Length: 245
Image (cartoon, rainbow, N blue to C red):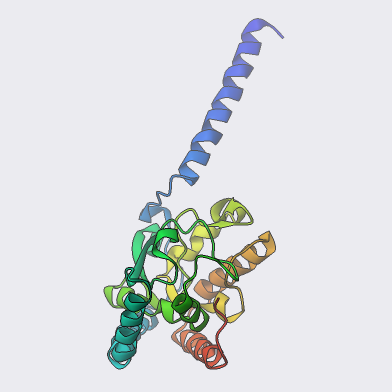
């Protein structure tokens, strides 16, 4: 091997390494262009339209009916620690867009993690007394009805994750290559993964993969009736005491 061949191999190795580094940087840049997401084949536009109409009707009706309860919760939170009522967080939306998601604040204001990287665990010291009840009953998620009306979210869909969400210490997109396929539909307040029990912190790779597999199954098999089944299963779970913490 002469010096020219050696230099050529070194240049090739350097170029390959550069491409890999650029790909890794792009994967971690949190920039997802809508055109990078292929359209779903065989999607029934009528059912998607029906889904959106039900979202608007359901979210609006729920806000009107629950308004006294929501107001009472807000007042209790102010009395309890005087902190802000709502917690805002940037999360993944439809086709990789970034949306601001609303929740009732369930943690001490000075310990909230707006990035969402630090996942909540059972007995988390950051959770307030009222916050523990809100999380157990999933009432802390109700302000997301506003996100549904805005069109950022749906009542049913893959649960929206915070940017740079991790599972088993790795970025989700590194652990599960098809991760961003789940963003082909609007994120939901509840979803198939949640009704199957895949919620909360994901400490093991198998848990993370099972959650994403449920999301992708939902997208590939979406129907309005599947949404109704997921909503029914969610309500049944909440009536039995909820699974939040």
